[in-house]
Image 1 (cartoon, helix red, strand yellow):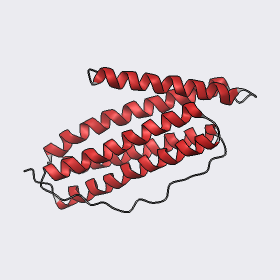
Image 2: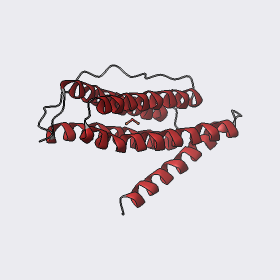
Image 3: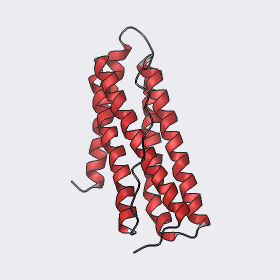
Image 4: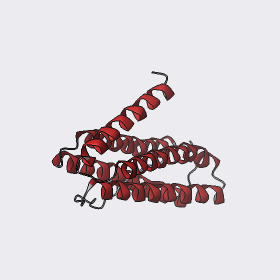
Amino acid sequence: MIDLSPKIQEALNNQIANEGFASNFYLALAYWCDDQALEGCKKFFLRQAEEERMHMMKIYEYMSESGVHPKTSAIPQVPIEYSNIQEAFKKVFDQERSVTQSIHNLLSLAMEENDYNTQQFLQWYVDEQREEEAVIRTILDRIRIIGDGAQSLYYIDKEIEKINMTVIASASNQNGE
Ligand code: FEO
């Protein structure tokens, strides 16, 4: 059994809600893309939604292993409409930046509280956020290069599908599959 201070418990419960929000955010985006006939983007966002759910579940498990009952809080409504895919990816970047900030705040709190187990646990999230931000930056760069000509949507969608396959392959390699 690991001791988690009340402050850390509250912050972890908040992070459960943040990761749940992120999962719903991507799920809503996937079906916005479905409406726009952007199949490559839809697959990318569906995989992201699953990943975020896994991020959330890891916190449930960590709290439970520590002998604490995790809270399942209400998750605010996520955005469901976007003007275009360029705007959608900019919002994705902002969303990931805000999750990164909340992980960093949590880590600072764990340091203040001399909670070494939580610091160790959060390190995985620090790495994961860095990788996620890097992927979204790559996508924003590609979108900029492709531009917004008549066929840009077709090429953006193909490019995102390729990036999605690369992320899947890299995750399989890391898991030794
Ligand atoms: Fe788990 Fe990308 O936030």
